[in-house]
Length: 299
Image (cartoon, rainbow, N blue to C red; front, top):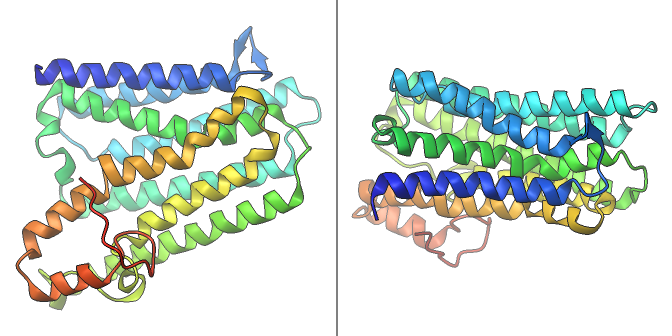
């Protein structure tokens, strides 16, 4: 199959998946000018990414890729909050406001962290070849748009439902899980950044801090965030809206199979595969979940 056709096909299916999920999530949801708010959110995610894709491809730069996701998260959450406030006179519930603030803080922190990292490093190796190909680079931006929508679709559905029929236990357990995951992600990123800026560690791999217990603790924290958020939103979802609980599953699959662990593991094997110390670290340290030492291959 022609590579260009395959990449356009993947982009097409990303749009179809997002559209189907938005239609299912729109069940019993609020409308704005006869259009389901959740569908408007889905469209906005793709529009923002495709707009930024144009200058990114023209200038052959990946530096705006991750921050585009942040812009999409913030825009969608702000727009949803605004529309729900217009439609519902009682305004947003405290639970919805807390999740909105939490996700916005998470998105800003991660987006700025990745932006400054790619600026300091000079490039993102994920896009070394992709940014030269219109179809492939377009596919990456489209996947990112799908990522943004599917990760917060359950949050958006909860905001739009604006229901107060939430069991406190779900909120406490879920929000606590998300906060712990957020802390793990921040600490892991900071530890790796500090390790890299130390010139004595040049060419070495990190085995200290949280990285002693997991080879990818930042991704473990990321998955915990969306598992926790799904626990918070679960009680207010009805019928086909339960499809939005795909959020943490999608995040886990993307981080382990598409753009995350699989790429980093391959890169590490290429750099340190013959290093006895790395082989020992890899053998004794869980690839994702801390303390689970069974080696799992991500290909």
